Image (cartoon, rainbow, N blue to C red; front, top):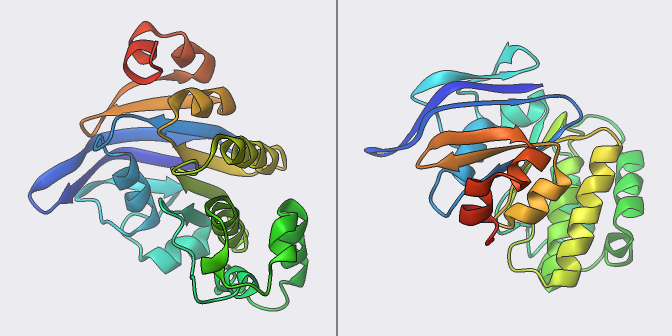
Length: 232
């Protein structure tokens, strides 16, 4: 589905990604874990076209999308839920969802109803301004907005950040449900244990390089991963 082939990305003079190689197969949840500043969000922003790689290739279904503008990458089928949610606070819930479908043509009412079925609270609050929602509700809105483009792959950047434990559990159940319906997901998450329990495979990124990769159950039992990222 998605491949990164020796991708290098710079922030000014600083090399943030140093030859990243990642593969995500159709229907998988793949976790990308690592410490703060390791390059996780940079990786997602490079895939999304917000940052341009200096070298390497990004392939979506064997088509080279390296360096395309963000809106063109959305049009190709990659949608991102950014860290911090970044909904439109002065637009209603419904208007936020409609913004997610800005590249689609024709009627998308069936997709809107699907989002309301997936997130019933959004249907209840569809006339409220996004900024009046709780943090958890805003995260649901951010995910639903990304899904409105009907992507092939969903990029999730720290979906549990700043949420109460009960809401974190709800968000992770929703991610599992979305995946069970066939959505391919790349998940960046500080809660490494929860991410690996949810995902099929995982990559550990350290200082801009992939240091460990494997099936999630293998990483959960890896001594280095357990010590460095699972608090064990």
